[in-house]
Length: 120
Image 1 (tube, rainbow, N blue to C red):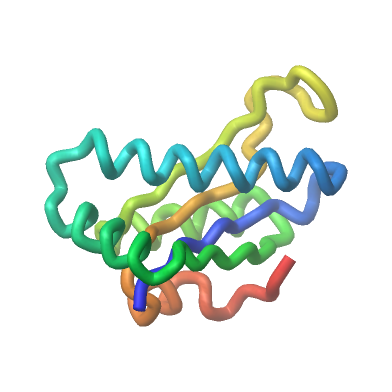
Image 2: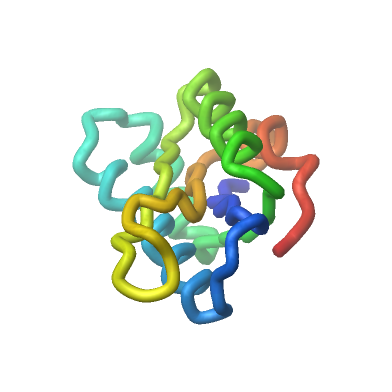
């Protein structure tokens, strides 16, 4: 099985709609990055994920440092990963890092990075 995990910062004030928008930005960005890459493994994972109903898990971290540690680990495992920065048009300052998207990739690999995190 393949899944996508979105890691949201819980230490900044965002309304539910804002969180939903940031999570959507991460999911769309991940898919576009894979489609625009030459990485066939990532594309195979994407196709499996699409066939499996596009499972997405949203979890939380308590700091920017925690989020960036997860990003670093995702890159070490050579997974698709993207950090989302807010444009600053509503609730946050421009450039505020809000969330991290990882995957889609096999569950067992993503769980090595995010398996310790609680659902948002």
